[in-house]
Image (cartoon, rainbow, N blue to C red; front, side, top):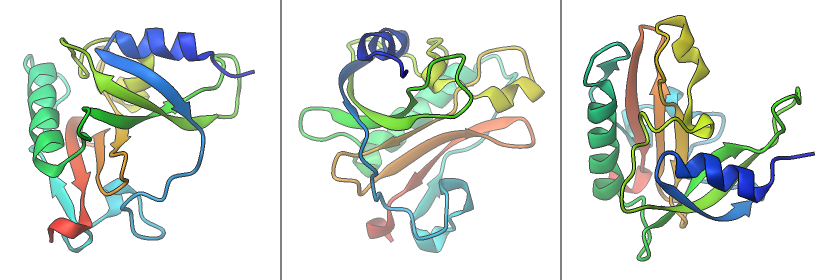
Length: 167
């Protein structure tokens, strides 16, 4: 049994994301074969924000600012401001993930880095801090842009964009 769309919508709303629909089809996206966002190199169209320490007092603000700058600069949003966010639709007690996408748009106010959405929470951050640390993947509807906000092994968080046609 997977989470209902209403449950996913309520969770994403905490971060200021308006849920539009569930997308369960496999997406191609801009990643080269056998590569994840973190293993892509500049020659694959990788662009990075500056890393922020997970315990920095201004971490949420800096992550949100970097995410917004990169999302607008690299074309995450379609003409209606819509994009896809990766979501695990499994019930909390389930063992195996049920990964898919949610088509969303930003609400008037949003806070991806500290809004408290479980879908956007990075559990690897618990190795470094007790605070909420974001980790999530987003892709443009045309699948040309991937944004991945991720937690690194040195206790920092940053946003990566993969956009091969910007080389």
